[in-house]
Image (tube, rainbow, N blue to C red):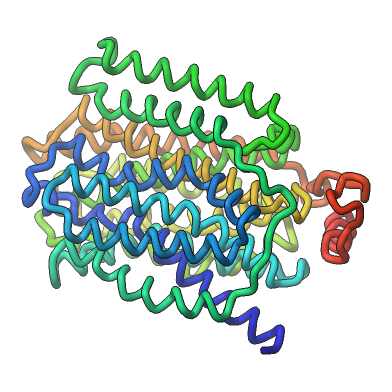
Length: 484
């Protein structure tokens, strides 16, 4: 098969896979009121229905990249896709909220393996000169899937049932597995070590913090069952950083963060995801609980926001090659923060939908300016053979931001409002949206710290640093182009 045909097949397989696993970040949001009724779920249960996926997704992303480096990216991509498909079937069959949460966690494991490998497999299949365009399309697909989750979920719930949100993944996974097995090329990374102590510290630390945040309003923020897990989580994350600084084969090379571009990009990712996930979690429920729309109608009303990546993200990818990531990220975060603030200002129980549309468009354009430029920026700061770890770190940070966004904004919502009356729901949602808008505004400030395009280069590397003692033509060409 020709190189061009292999590249096309690689793009198709990776795009379908990343769309499917990204869609499940928020596909359940418009189904939450129905799940709440059918399974008798509490607000905590609804939060964990979202967070069980995003949390396991976040903490295992770096392990997914490392497994691909060690055992083969194609092989582990197939394993991750199979796990995700099985988890989807288990979620569809879940008889209780606890079983659904467990199945969502299994989905997250599969997604954590698939997502970073789609980026490294695709990046390896295209030339550095076309990487911006490829990542722009990849970013658009990923961002569109995250944002379209409420629409797809609403359509499926209304037309069939909430279980079909998960059943739909099964035939896609079954069809994609043999195609990926036949059409993808196998590759491995230079670093094949597994940092199991680092994985344990990061996983338990993040779980402790999220566990405390979700339970804070119900049990009291000073109670031992809330303050204890949060404090323990912070300590464990501190221990994780210390371990990563000392171990020879770190899961997260802390030297990446010495690059101002890499650090600023990840702070921007954390806070953007915080605001986006938390806002969509509440807005998808607002249209149903307060304004009485069906799940599909609620999802469709978010389209002015969610459809923007189709049009904007590929253009942003091309522009990031020409003008760099900083102006796009600063503008995107400013637009998104303004959009969230606009929604917070105008929302009432009976607000006309037309008054929300400009804010949705503004937030959608802002979000669309984020995905491709940040991926291009992150990969431009590291050596080509370390792209898997770098993309894994950035995806992890983004997913952690989403977990914290849902947990924190739901806590603000619960503290100020509730489900008892439409006005009480709006009170809680508006307060939460202001918190989300503030987080995204800080993301824009962080993006200002990104260096100009000409100053963003990968770490220098000598031939002696390579394990085989010799640089590949691809590595050397990439370094020459990035330094130019």
